[in-house]
Image 1 (tube, rainbow, N blue to C red):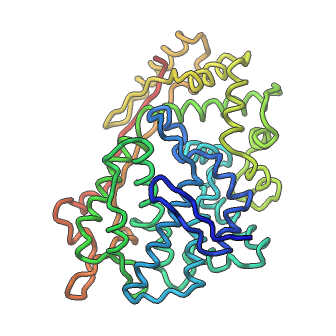
Image 2 (cartoon, rainbow, N blue to C red):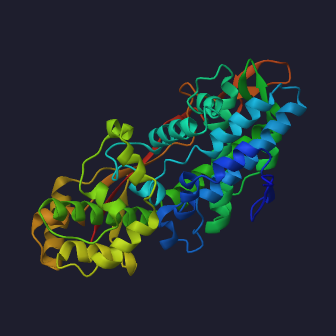
Image 3 (spheres, rainbow, N blue to C red):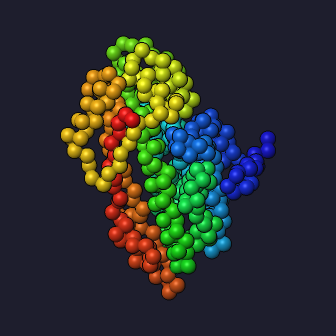
Length: 404
């Protein structure tokens, strides 16, 4: 079988699969599942074009990784074929642990479990099936390999993951502020003392990348309407779980039911049945449930599901400081009166929280700039048009949702 396949991508054009092992991993059912998970969750309710999937993103990130390896080799950075395959697999599989609707439900299917934890567990299990062929990829992914720059290409403040999702999300949402010069940034990457650095002439490109990331967070990833939709979706699953726990019968796929009937934590990732059900769970399970639940006899569940399906979302307010308890209570009283529900159930409609946008951090992961005289400086020391020192503090805003 010919495994040197070519994929036509709307962002980069033709992407080539260069290694048999990479193709074998793409063909895995655990990986193909990413075709059924939207990259931006419910953001398509704001930007209708945002229908792209995690599958598209990781294929694109893999392509950028191959380009970066090729560029670094041209600068006499020695990267073996085994390391090339390892770092390609690490970026390819880095998102394999995402649950339905990506970040929207990250901590609800499994309690306080990050998708990186599930990715690590799945990579270990796939590695066993493949007789240890992913050993190097896992070392790179978990930052245990003695050449740190390979991990930094996968996960850092200027990695192939971020470069792809900014360009891709900008393309599919139509938010042009997210467009960055990916090709130039990759050409400006270098390695010194086994650490990933940026050549001095690439400073302005990196600054534009950081600014684009800031714009994309406020305009796309933390868009207030997307946040409101996420709150409704989380509320619907919480209410469904509560009803099932009280003995009510609710429709769901067997895979979703598994997670609705249990409270699972990180320690449960070792259980075969948890991983088996997780690998069969995708956006379709959630949407199918919402379509049925909108007709539920339970007013709260029915209302939440109808809101999402008909895009009649919660009202959301954004402020620079936390809302007072008196204001929150006032909102709950208003919702109880409008919907005819008791105050306890108003928590499904009145949510509070904070939004944090941290563009850049120097805490142990600062970008290093390779100066023309051979020295290294942190980006915050060399940036002229963006005050990165002050930018270390995250921008925090507060929100509250209620019924329109």
